[in-house]
Amino acid sequence: MIYSLLKWFLFKLSAEKAHHLTTSFFNFLIATPIIGSLARRIFAFEHKDLQRELWGLNFKNPVGLAAGFDKDGKYIKSMSALGFGFIEVGTITPRRQAGNPKPRLFRLVKDEAIINRMGFNNEGVDVLVDRLKALKKTDVIIGGNIGKNKDTPNEDAYKDYLICFQKLYNHVDYFVVNLSSPNTPGLRSLQEKGPLRKILQTLLDHRSQQDISRPILLKIAPDLNEGQLDDVIEIVQELKIEGIIGTNTTIERKPLTADANKISAIGNGGLSGAPLAKRATVVVGLINTKSNGSIPIIGVGGIRSGRSALDKINAGASLIQVYSGFIYEGPFLIKRIKKSLLKG
Image: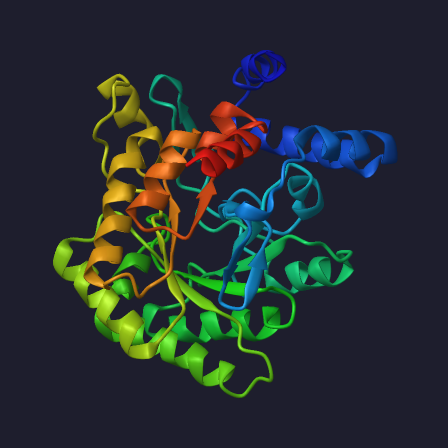
């Protein structure tokens, strides 16, 4: 009820303004000892059967916050108070960049969907590193989602990924290579065999020289055809990277019930939320089937209830992430999902 009233107010604001307002205000509230302690008690729900061990990491529960919500690691403490088992920051790039012109974030309320063309807006990897260094110890696993700057030519993209990888290496628990955002021109072409192998091998070469082996995951688009998906699985298995995140946002606009003129006026961008649920689950299932269950998967896309979370788990996901569903359903979604996962 409370979130319904808050959402009514927030949805009167532009999507991006509402995001910054709520996250900043909640950060402030959590920083106060009394409210912070109360929030943790309200949202607390853990159980030994929710714990997962993957890649040598101990997740207190399998429900994570997807990349894009906290691009610069500003909200790790406040989001962890809501009960997430892991939080993925980014997408981060070597240098600060403003992203695409505003407006660039749009709600399709009837569809419980979001279209974004943010364009990897972030403060740059050095700022994120400083923020992570200052972060007090937490039991929440932190992932680093890395990308390339918009003005970096694709032939040099591997250098950008390596810079982020090197600088974040001692400050996150796992890495996600993001080649699948539709909002950086030409980025998705890096999912093709040649450039994909070069980027991943560059990171693996650096990792081989480190004392600790950080897991590397690849985030893929839901719009890959079956042949492209086969290529991705082949490379993941060949190079022995640790897993796949399925999926990023889609450039498809089906099935949407929103007015066609409104969708056309919004223009380009990645679609997330409820309309993506079915396709993302299909992709998770295909990865699991084609790899004979050998590739760990984080399932993301359209999760807005315990049932939709279980759909991803039943399709083969070991962990799940939420974003758009979190916006539409509110902070109690995490607790509801965890309870549903326990019931099976």
